[in-house]
Every structure is written in structure tokens, then in C-alpha cells.
Image (tube, rainbow, N blue to C red):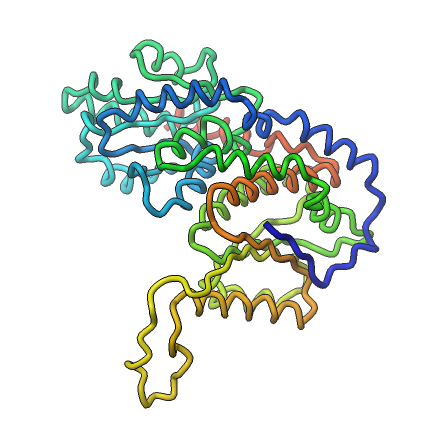
Length: 401
């Protein structure tokens, strides 16, 4: 992984020595990252997963927010999957009903993820499935094919799991949902997809052990310690569909961590090349209040060959001896060069290949950069107080309706 900054002036940033020390201390003690070095925990997870996947033709993961997005980001980089995994993170009633009416409880594995064990969305999904199983007189089959990931404490989900002899894996109470991708929450679906977890952890460890070599405090310093409030938004533009759900995961990580005390720089996710046709005009022609991160890889000579004969006598000669990857590569380069010559501040994060090791690097980098940015603007990276009010009101409205 290579990181290069362009059109950036680091002379304006304030002194950060005391905060830098604090950041290194937090990272060195962070359970969400240190979990990658716990071989005993990983070995136990492997045993449970092997037991769970026996005789499964389909696997479904139920969870919301951090209980889902990290696992989806990992699953999305695998082209040839070991098992088909579906993810459900919402409670749209029509979509959910239509997706589960004809479910086979004998051959489907259900992974239920909730850190607290009382997440309303996840429990509603769980109870809806139980009702379907009950109507079919297949509750025994349902419970025998469930794996629950939750804190081992007195909660509705943990109680139900214990009472019905479901497989259980612990969700550490020291790891928040948006930081849980390297824990059981992300790793269990990843193993089932066919992710090489050793390579994933290797990439993460490379970043954790070389924070200064990769200059990972640089982004937070540049965005959050300017003498003037230069930026309102930080845009990440991913040039690979394999990174689509990484972008969604990153938005939650950044937004829930930094958006407090009326402070924050808003994260935006764009997809190349799609959003060149929807958002690029705003970025290039609108307010110059954004910083950009382009996450790229080498697409050259990849994909299907483009047949140029069909365009004969049309004057359209760009596709001669080209593959689809060549077009992606050219558009990627053209966008970056446009930002460079027009003096927009940006960086390019180049991944030689989109695989387990490099996604591990990217995820760990995102953890560290997000935490650093929070410390620089003096907010707690690990809580989300504004979210709690909505949860309380949701329960009140349900009771009254």
C-alpha cells in the first residue's frame, strides 16, 4: 500500500506532540486491533465455525451497523466464495418478508449478531424468523442452525441462545460495533466466505507496527489542526466495486466516532467511475471545502476484451486492443490528474492488489486515522451519545402504539 499526498500545505498545522503521544498509547492498548494477535481466541472461533457450517447450503447474517458492515466489506472482496452469505441489516417489512417466506430451516445457517443482545432491529429479525419456523413446526431445526455473537451477559439474545442450546461466540464488551471487523463479528462470516484470515491479520499487523512509516497521523493533523477551518468534508472515492462496502463501513466508523460536540468533518463515499457522472461536477465546480482520498488499484489489462469492430466507421476508436480494465484505469488516472492540475488537496491510497492482506491494511489504517482525528479535535472516538436518544424514543413509541 502506498499513500501519496498532493496539493497539501502542512505548514499550517498546529503543534500536536502531546496528542501524538496519547494516540500511540490508545492504539497500543486498543482491543479492536490487539485481537489480531490473540491466537487462542482465533483457534476457538475456527472450531465453532467448522461445527456451524456442517450441512449448510445457505448462510444468513443478521445484524445492523457495525454488526454487519465490516463483515460485508470483507465478504465483498472475495470473487469465488466458499459459501453464499446473505446480509440483512434493515427492518423494511416488505423486503424482509419477501426475502424469507420460503426459507429452508434445515439447511440454512443463521448468524445473529448484537453486541448488547438487545438491539431492536436484530431482535425483530430474529423473532420474525422464529414465527415463520413456528408456523412450519420447525423451531427445533431453526435453533439447531443458529450461531449467536453477543456479549456474555444477562440480555434477551444471550438468554434465548443459552436456553435453546444455540452455538454462542462472545462479542467482547471492550470492542464497539464499528471497531469489530477484526473480532468474531467480522471474522466468522469472513471464514465462511473463504477469506484467508492469516493474510488479513498480517496486513493489519503491518500497519499497526509501522504507524510512523506510513505517516498515519498525517490525515488527522491536516484535516483537524489547521489554523483556519478549511474543510467541511472528507471524500473517499473507491475505484473498485470490491471496495463498495468498505466505503459504507468507513462512513459509519468516521461519522459515529468524530461527530460530537458540534464538531466534525463529514465523510462522503463516492464510487469510481459511477459518481464521476453524478458528484464530480460538485467536487470540481462547487465549494473548495473538501479533502479527497482516492483509493485505487491497477486495473490495466483486466476484464473482458472490448470488441472494437462494432464501432467501425463511427470514429469511435478508443477501444482498439483494449480491455474493460484499461478504461477503468484511464478514467481513474484522468480524475486524479484533473484534481492535481486544478490544485485540489487530495491523496491517493494505492493498493497493488485487492486481497486479504491489503484490505487488512486499509481497515487498520482507517481505525488509526479516525482515532487520531478524534483526539486532535478533542472528542471521544469510542462513544455515540446522540444515537442513544433515538433508541430510547423508539422503545417508547412501540409501547404506546
